[in-house]
Amino acid sequence: MNAVRSRLVSLLIFSLIALAPAVAQPGQQAAQEHDQQEGPRGAGFMGMGSAVHGTVTAIAGGEFTIKTEDGTTYKVATGPNTHLMKDRQPIKASDVHVGDVIMTGGDVDEKAHTVGAVFLAVLDPTQVQRMKQAQADFGKTWTAGKITAINELNLTIERPDKKSQTITVDENTSFRKRRDSITLADIKVGDTVSARGALQNGNFVATVLSVVDFGRRGPGGPANGGQGGPEHENAAPPQQK
Image (cartoon, rainbow, N blue to C red; front, side, top):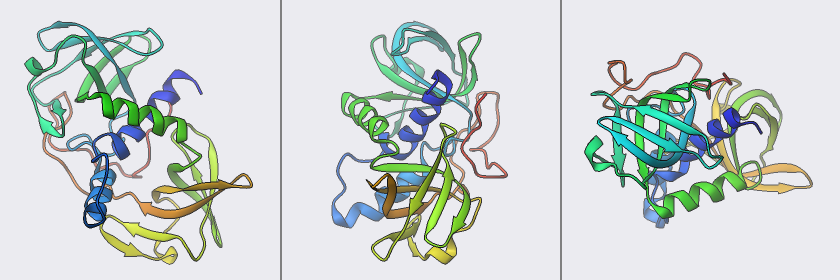
């Protein structure tokens, strides 16, 4: 997986997992799934292009220098419409410090190593560990992507890393859209889904299959002054640049 695709998967993981509570009690499960599907408010679910995460090494006003795990340095520019958060709460640029681990997404220039940030989130150690674990488990115990074909009980998806994967459902699979229970008949080609389950004989068998809803807008917006989170026509994960 190249660096661009790795960052797309990181953003997907962050959207689905990093902002959700670490452990959901039974009465909180529906709300957690709702939050996981929404992703970072104001950014949309993977709706702002690629993403970068790394450690802050320098700060100059609203511009942050970060170093990624592979040693690449990025300049991250924030503005009045950048949505900044920590512990799922809004923060100011002055609340971000050297040494913090952040996830940021927006207009990413892979050649210039710059980011025009739509959102910037400070991750705590638990979130960082969960994201790393989720990235390792991607395609094994959970997966996500846009449905490209449905053949009876088999759904073929295109994942954010551009790989194709087949999800098999059976009588034990639960189907959800936000807080509502749905059926397999409600799921269509073109929907973007996330699934939890396990590989069985090389096949991903889903225990829970959720349709990701892109209809909600969050506060804030693009760093260039846009209002609200984007609603993309195809509601699909971003394409490789």
